[in-house]
Length: 268
Image 1: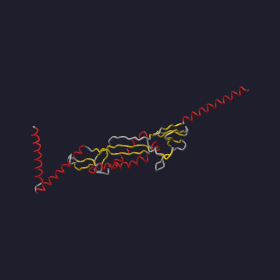
Image 2: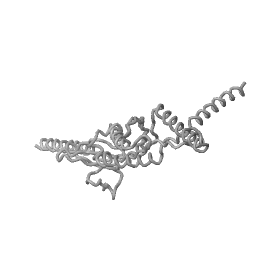
Image 3: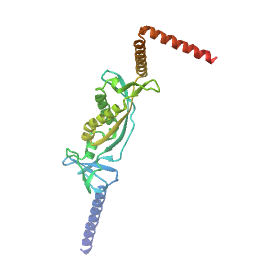
């Protein structure tokens, strides 16, 4: 009888030990360590709501909570390839865009594990993990950037983007209107705030480094501006001397030809 009782007690103790060990292993599997510059987004399978775990040690309930995605909180600047848009003329323009700041806005906290939510009351980390395919974020952000760049640049004509004033030293147009390009970059960032930062929780700051026009267009503009300036100079000379502008122009051509031959003769 005593032996039977001892066997029963031993079995109960062994079962309890196995249960405790299994429970401990199950609990340990729910342990989540989050690095300082990362966040882990989980989903409550019962309620369907998602939440973000920030830096530190956390415990989740296996079966009730499921890990969806690990999100980086680091800044991720990058340089996309040049893409084409159309101005108001329309003129096809290549946009050399640099995204100098891109990060999930989840590192803002008002206290320990108390996130600063977006104006809509949603954690930006949760947005980044659930509203887009986070692994393809650069591709998706570039699509929005292209669309917004088209929206902004489509309001401007080529002659406003390209400074046609002649540089006295190079005798060529000064080129891009840098002040205007800076304002356009600001407009672009305002649009990206509405189309990317607020809905997706990813802050994006971009800068237009350059606008690339077709060589033929740049050369045509340069030739046209030079021709216009030369024409104005001829008319001024004609008015001053009371002479026919055509005669003045012919004289300029002859002088240019003579200068060419003079240069050839001097090189012999």
